[in-house]
Image 1 (cartoon, each protein chain N blue to C red):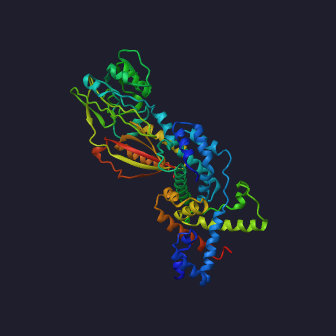
Image 2 (cartoon, one colour; image 1 turned 45 degrees about the vertical axis):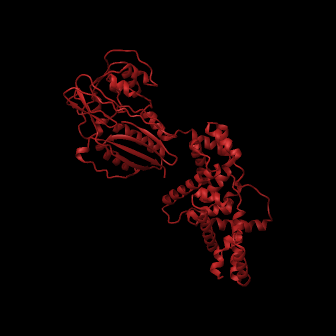
Image 3 (cartoon, chains in turn cyan, blue; image 1 turned 30 degrees about the horizontal axis):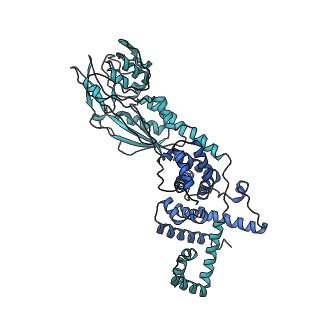
Length: 339
Length: 194
């Protein structure tokens, strides 16, 4: 056995893992090799010191500190609550198929400066009527039942998404466009484009069929269930056609933030501006992420704002938007890490 | 580590939402978790942050704990991973080329935070303290995967199987990595040690 071989065996020797024969050869080598013997002695001493490393006492009130951390709500659920009151709505397919028309606005378009952000003329908001079916309404959870009323005209800006739903549930709803959106102002009556998951409403002159696109998500542990609903309908004029978006591409953007709270606040503002269509929280132990839909042509705005704020973003796909798909909804997934 | 049976009931209660059970779990393991983080990060405050975060993560995902591993393996794994991630962040922040560039936490700084053990003779104490500081520094200069196995085996005294489960490599790899790590430590301490 040479020195190199012997030194390779130090650990196994000290942990008594050498078979008898090898051990004998090893001992024999060490008996005659003072260099190796010295090395082994030093090796042993290091291990002994490591073993004697004192245990360090954690700070007092460790448990309380853990609880304090737990009590802080996860950042995303704060956003969620502010931007979108989670409500869980189930509309049974059969009910819709059978009868009629409803629906619910997948609203999450915030009453904010949408018009200022979208460079292309996004027409004024919608003008449509819808009414619900009783059973569908009953399925709606978490909303106070509203007395039946006729043709209530509601300013969109006054409606909180949740209320809007309950209104729709119980009543005829008529919504009209709001000047304050600063939307392309020429035709306040022009039919608007409503973006919901996978669906784009485009104007058409003939009357419509509707297509129900209920989207229900089930989540496992650690995820929140969000209302998803989108179905559409139309009754009278103007009439709309439901056109399903051909594809929704998902962009994943990883945001690295040094100051989570501050950057979350900025994101809230930005997302409000951009008009979130739905928000999904995906809580994973390592990172938090949420997904929302925006128009493809808003992606640049999003990215440039993020860069301005020096929240680094790493889009994983090419973000160049082709003209023809500019109005397509895309799903953006923001993954926030603090690293 | 001790028999896990007591833990099983504790974990089950945690999964059912018992805060008392969670508290008991924290109190039982926080010192060990803290020390692993401390030896990996070589910084008391960072270790505290990481250790707390370990239990926050544990709390949030306890429902998914499948009892396939022991709870402390799971906790240690989280601790090792979070420590590793934290080291990377710190390194980037300092734009340094070594992974732990901060002045190494010395025992002098920590002495009031440590458990007072039996006091050996002052002279011995000084020598040992100095040796331990040198070792800490040498340890801090090892690459993450080498430091981790030394901390888990030689400082924390875990069994090979436990280490293998924590860092998710096979036992053979643990042993060979450990030996290399020890030899690297020895090289760094060569001549300086005595």
